[in-house]
Length: 225
Length: 285
Image (cartoon, rainbow over all chains, first blue to last red; front, side, top):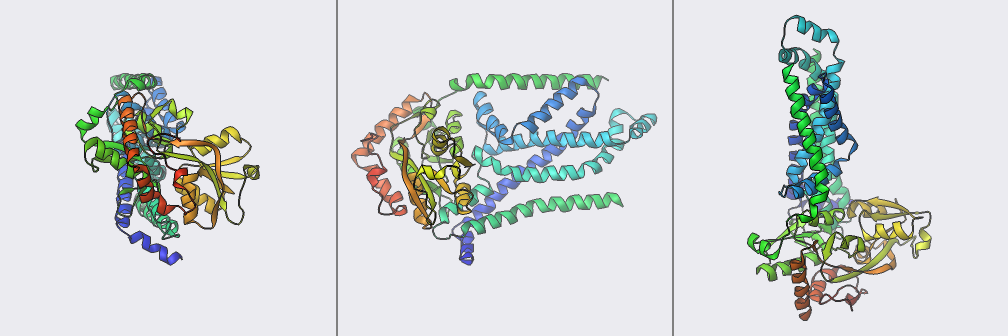
């Protein structure tokens, strides 16, 4: 019976464990999103500078994260880099590092796209007014670019939230893994456990991601008026 | 612009260091530190890698505690090594990353239903076995698969990185494989009829088919009889020897049978003979 399966959510400390897993998921996602937003602006700025070397370096950085699967990066940092340097890093820290680097690369490209899409006269007018390099970016270009990059940035953020489910491969127990543990454990007593557990996980992910969508809508509306 | 030049210099250096570090990593892995018994004793806790979603071998109960056959044995190892069965840290591992957990020194021992294979022997050191297993194929009772020939041109579900995947890729390349990372996903896929059958270790399937009466283990032994053994990091002979001696000692009190009765028996149907599953004293009879 489907209705009896819902009890599995409240058996033992199951609900607590699921929420604990959610906290891990949310922590990794949001810390990475914040770091990659900040780093992304810097990376994006670098990408628009007209230095061949810089452009090559950042192009390489971006492509490295685009082409190589995130799972491979997680393995590489968690098992490879820590072993080589003979240090121990928690899976969660590795996850935040990898997700931040990935986010910064992608966010950088979004920022670059937004900056380059601005009409050339914006920069030229700014220079004509005698603004310095930093003033030009701080007061003229970045405020305008932020509006244009918002949809892409929100899209990237929700993608990052969802991709966190990979962290289980490096031993981090996130909300999806807790769900699977409970399902496997309870399948005899509650055959419908998977429906209820995955249903709850669906709602939990929605609760994390939906505020991001609202936020972007609000900001776009605010700037429109 | 001088800022630009400085930035160029800084980032090129970082880039170069990164690339060089990346190249170096493949060469050095073997010489990294080994966790010897003294190290474990100094640490006061032994790190053992177990499964978290494979009842009855390794799973997490409703209160978040690790349980199961492997866990039962792991606790005894901790008791005999450090004098207290609570001095064990269970590291929850996935099938596809068990080797890496050992290689990168994230755990001291893997006790996660680890089947001994030639390929794995190159990367980790196995102690003597405590269990034996063959492959099995589970399918719906209504449309049972009773021989491998029936699978030709159909989809078979397997887990990535398991013996089942290796066996079918090598011996039956004409069978289309649907591969999943997690057991949960694989069994859900079978229930959703994404494949006609699922191949996995028979010991796991016996238990699963008991819980899911609408499925039957149509092929109960396939391929070679494989041994399941604890594994340690390559070259850690001290710990390997200790485990072998420990298994011999435990064999004298029939401890593995006790573990079977406590954890596996309730999960299997009565038709399963314990002698088909457990190995006492570390030796295949």
